[in-house]
Length: 112
Image 1 (cartoon, helix red, strand yellow):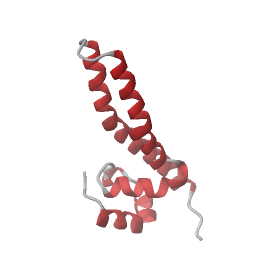
Image 2 (tube, one colour):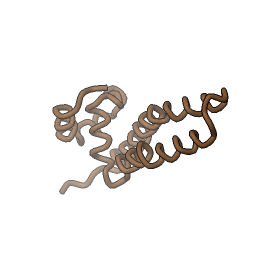
Image 3 (cartoon, helix red, strand yellow):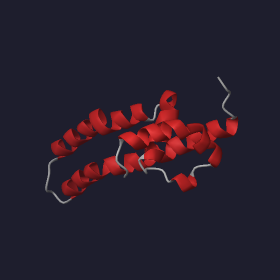
């Protein structure tokens, strides 16, 4: 198997971190709403704790697993294929390296 250049590996790590942050921000919005409701006295502290627990067991865990280092190639390819990451921001050598995997995900998932 052909060795992946260091600049591609570095770019993949950076892109994975960016995609993770974008998805995490989106996943945190419902939790932020619970905190706002708590600040306004509309929900109890117990409701906030339950929401935090549900977030930790669900979306947070899923995103952690999705962007785990051993899945970096597929997670970045999926993020590109689904529009989470803009193709225009991805270096050409990374796009070339992930081309087949991006195609697979583009055929399977709807764009964001």
